[in-house]
Image (cartoon, rainbow, N blue to C red; front, side, top):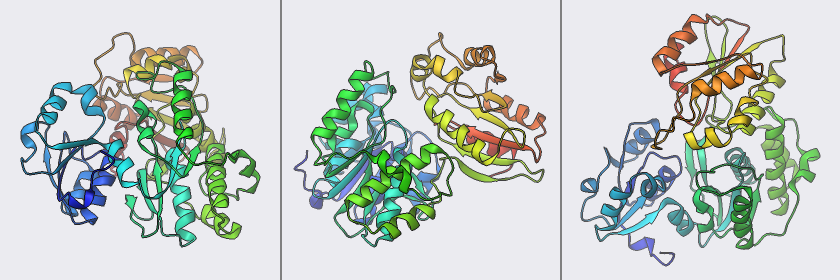
Length: 416
C-alpha cells in the first residue's frame, strides 16, 4: 500500500477514530479537504474536537457503519487482535484498508522524517523537538501521542519537509516508518503480551535502526548542555538531551535550542498540573503506566515537593492484565516516594480477564514492601474514599495511568 496515491482518495472512514495517534491522521485528512467519517466505542474530548472540524463520527463498532462509497478505511491496530470477526468483516467490504501505522508510513514516506522511539519519553521528546524546530522557524509537521499545550492538538501541519513523529514499538508498528533521523530514548521490557522477551524487543529496535539513515550519536553527552527546565525530573532532562542532539545534528543555533527548552511547558497528561482546590491541594494527572515511568514521575514530584513539606497521594489505574502480571514485582517497588497509593481496577482494554492478577493483589504486595496502599472495586467507591481523605494545603493528589483515573479527580474536585 506504500504506492497508494492519497491525492485520489476523497472519502476516508476511521475505525477507532478517537485514538490519540489515529485521530491525528484524521485531522490531517480534514485539513487536506477530504471527507472524514469514523466510529468509536465512546465519546471523548478528541472526538468532540474532530466533530468541530467537520468529521462525521458514529458511536459503536460494526462494518454496517462504514458507507459503501468510502475510498479507504484506516483502523486502529487494536481491532484485529481484540475483535477479529469485525476485522474480517471490514476486509470483506472490498474497500482499500490500512492500519494506522501503515498510514503513518505512507504520509511520511517522502518527508524528512524524524522518528522518536523508545519505551519511555517518546511523547515529551517528540514535543521538545517540535518546539525547537518551530522556534527555529523550520516549520515542521508533527504527530505526537498527546496534546501539545501551545496548539492543544496532536497534529501540527507545517510547510517544510520536516516531519516529526512518535514511533510506537507495539506489534513492531514503527517498522512502517523509514526515518531520516531516528531517536531511541531507551529500551526496556514492555508490551510482553506481544514480545517474547527483552531480546525480542531489542531486535525490533535494531530493525528500525537498520532502515533509518542515522549517524549514531550518544544523546546523553548533551545532558550537560541542557538548561534549567520548567518540567521537573531527570527523565525530562534526558528527554531534553535527546532533543538537543537532534537539533544539533540539524545545525540549529544553540541559543535557539536552549531558549526553546527553557520555555517548554510540557504536554497533556505528562505530569500535568490540573489545578488547586480551595483547601490548597495541588492536583496533577500523569500518563505513567510502566514501573519505570511511575518511579520517574514520583521522583520529579519530589524535586518540587520534598519529603516533609508535602504528602503525595497517588490514585493509580493499572493498565492491562498482561503488563501488571509481567511487571508485578517492579510495580510493587515503584511507589516508594508516595505517602499513600489508591488503586482502581485494572484497565483491561478488551483483554480477557485474568483472575491471577488484580489491583487488590497489587495493593497487598505494595503494603508488604512497606507502602500504604488500598484497592477499590470501582470509580465511585474510589471517589468517596478520596473525598473522605479531606486533603488540604499539605497534600499533592495525582491521578496516574494510561486509562481514566483522571475522571475521579474530575468529579471529586469539580475539575470538569
